[in-house]
Image 1 (cartoon, rainbow, N blue to C red):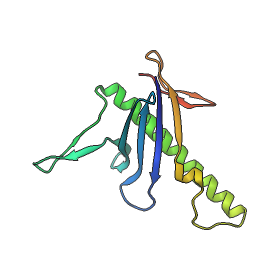
Image 2 (image 1 turned 120 degrees about the vertical axis):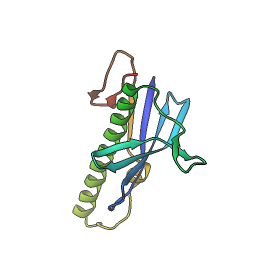
Image 3 (image 1 turned 180 degrees about the horizontal axis):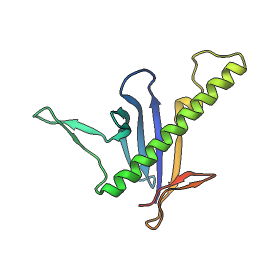
Length: 136
């Protein structure tokens, strides 16, 4: 199964939400509304949720197993880290070229994408052309 993680927007500042993300499974099913959040113990991925009558929030899309939740979180966080690196490189390039303004490039606006070939027998493995592979 081919899974694509996309970082849609990165937020600057001291807010707990650092980025929003989406995931596409085999080009057939997409989940949007994931958030990269800074918590007491570091970064984690918050699944899309909806407020219910009692005021609490319930996830509307989520991994069924603990193992897959960890794999999904690792993939989203890896995409987020790559996006941060790309943004830093773009800012350094703009500064070097004398265009150090606040304009975003198409690459920054589009977000960082990872494509993952999934195989139940595999765990995350770094590859040169596809970022990381995610086992399911």
